Amino acid sequence: MLESKLIKKVKKVVFIAIGLGMLVPWILGLSINSGNPWSLRMILKMAIESLTILSVGYLGVKFAIESIQLYEGQKGEVVEEKRELYYLKKFADGLINNSGVGVDVVNENYVIEFANMELVHFFGDVEGKKCYNSYFGRDKPCPNCSTQKSIETGEMAEGHYGWRNGKIYERISIPFENTDGSMSTIGIYRDVTEKNRLQQKIKESREKYRALFENAQDAIFIYNLEGDIVSANSSAAKLFGYNREEIFEMNIAQLFTQQDMGVVRGISDRLVDGELSDEHYELNIIKKDGKVSLIEVSVMLMLRGEVPIGIQCIARDITERKNTERKIKNSYMKLQSAYGELKILDRIKNNLIANVSHELRTPLTITKSAVELALKEMDKGERDEILSTAQKALLKQDRIIGDLVGASKIFKKEFKLKLEDVDLEGIIVLSKKEMESLTFANRIKIKSEVEADLPIIKADYNAIKHVITNLLDNAIKFNIEEGEVLLKVKRNSKYVEVMVEDTGIGIEKDQLDRIFDSFYQIDPSPNRKYGGTGLGLTVAKEIIEAHGGKLSVESKVGKGSRFTFTIAINLQKPSHSTTIKTPGFLSMHRR
Image (tube, rainbow, N blue to C red; front, side):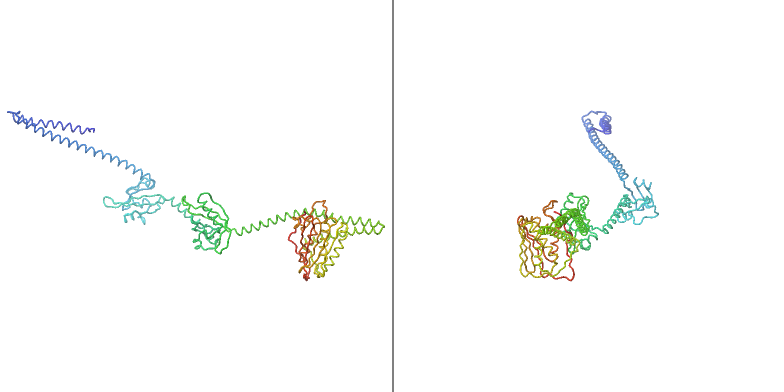
């Protein structure tokens, strides 16, 4: 260990003193015993005294050096402590003055004993002044003073104060006892002006949110991750049919249909997992009365910090809207269908004019030519044959006109039955006779099987005759050469059944339901083999149904067709004419 300068100096002085001290016994011995100073006894005596002085001196030196070392050690510690205190004070001053909060010491007499730079910056040099005057501009202590409260209770106290600088401070008072037994407080002031302003804004926002929440027309409800309803506005309670107390006891499993509950759980899981953001869904709910309604609902994940705590739903009942949309859609589809049919009808109109013109012009041309030839023919037999041809053409034209007139009345809903007692057998005879000219030309045989004692029926004579002649005309027209037509009439329970069967070309299966459509042609081409307007079967079907009967068809391609209709025997004559009930819109496709 290196010795300090002080120790070296002390050692030097002490060693000199010890040396001088050791010489003292010798000097005294020599001066006192001048006769024989170097006797053995004197030498031993002086030596012992010198050694004693040396020992005492050595011990003294050792003690002195240890004392000096101890002193120097303590002095170093004191210096180090002073240095630490110095830096600690600088640190404390920096901390107190640059902490961004006000710090002061106020005694029990309201005197400010210390104020940091934060307070000095706002209020100037306030040390030694009364706190209530310096901070608040008052002449007497503040009511509910946290300083006095802290001193009286011996505990920390808090308070909020609006100071004269226009700001609001939160003060924490910490009491302590001074060495003289008096009490003071350390005050820590934090500017909470902005915090209070934000809290006020938050409060206002919460009040606005609560007002919006409660008065919203849409239903708003929140359920936790277990599905329990934790918040709901009055609209939500009304939507589900419960009161506010009841809705808070519900779980979403009780509010949604079983089928849609699986969808709700899936939505909740995906929201919590972060796979969805705000989304809209259409779901079915069950109301308190058991009715099911469709709602449109938007969902949003509720967080506390970053932790999911629930799902917020905003919903509205869209049952009526969906019903309206469905009606509008149906109406639109009907309009589209009607528009399509009108376009078809427009095409049919053009085709009908050309077709009907042709069908009407042909019999007229034949009749005109036949009459001109008959006028020039001198031979009676030839003339009668020519006139017979003209008659056939006129009969054909009469049927065409009858179909057109009947169809027109049907479309206008003006067709009326004129019911009377009708002998069906008489109609059969007349119709068969009327068709003989056509059967002769095509070498087709008409057979009739009429059950004996047929009852008299109530029917429109001309209408029933028109149906039978129309069916016979088709049976002849679509028959093969030298084919046969069977006209059969029988009584069947409460009906009279009339059947017209041919051995003709037959009808494809996919056309059977369409042959009763207005203007339908089996061969739609302009150069078709078979003439006609396509209205005969339409008119016939309407006439039979107006009589309470039914017209049906059976057919096999290459084998022939069988048309059957029934007329009720007990059909009563109404007190006034009966209007035929026709379909709302007759299909007018030409095929």
